[in-house]
Figure 1 (tube, rainbow, N blue to C red):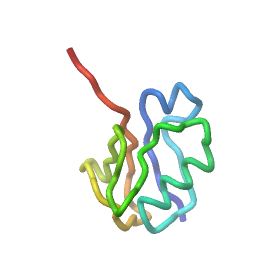
Figure 2: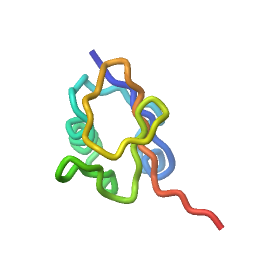
Figure 3: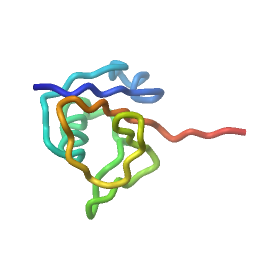
Length: 87
């Protein structure tokens, strides 16, 4: 089993492909941990603390933002979204 993870901006410029397949894990926290182990040069990725997504980055699962550690299904599409600014 595997998960599809989509990355943008700084993740891509730091060497992460725009689409990553990782071994299936059951929670968002374990997905983020696997990303950090696979790509240790990406320090800005959000963390899960006290069951909540922390940091300036956002996570979307199946095109919906999530703010809590949630169960991940094998068919889920996870997007790791860097901070967005405008002006």
